[in-house]
Amino acid sequence: MKIIHALFTASLAATSVAAAANGDADPSRKEGHPVRKEQTDWGIAGEAREARRTIEITMSDTMRFTPERLQVRQGETVRLVVRNSGRVLHELVLGTRRELEEHAALMVKFPKMEHDEPFMVHVGPGKTEQLVWTFNRAGEFDFACLIPGHYQAGMVGKVVVVSGDAKADQGLK
Picture: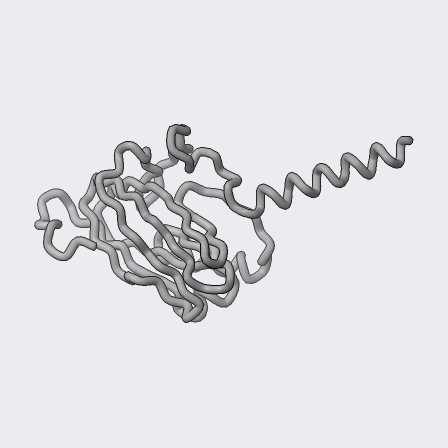
């Protein structure tokens, strides 16, 4: 009986870990749930109800994002709708170039590394996910797919956050 109980417990634990690793692990990304907020150099998690603009980004197996360059106003909360048109898992991670390079190197060493931050989203083949972000610091920041080999193949993009003083309405995507 003890062996059966131990096997059941191990099976339940393995199922829970697998479910958490396959998307929907962060209920805070769903409408109506509070998001975990931590200030980063590139901004802070936003509330879905505060997003006034939606930007659609497509990821493909050609290891590219479309569009590759975004421009937003400082202080703007944006909903990023990220669609994977490919046949392999992709992700979108916001950050500084240095942060993304360090994270990409770790992903090569530990490809099964699990992480769930409000500035990243994993998107399965043919699926669409979203993240909401407040770009509260002006500057140039990056986004990338850090799945091993994808970043190295050039799957990167740029976010230009213009200060409230600049004419941000020109060329916004």
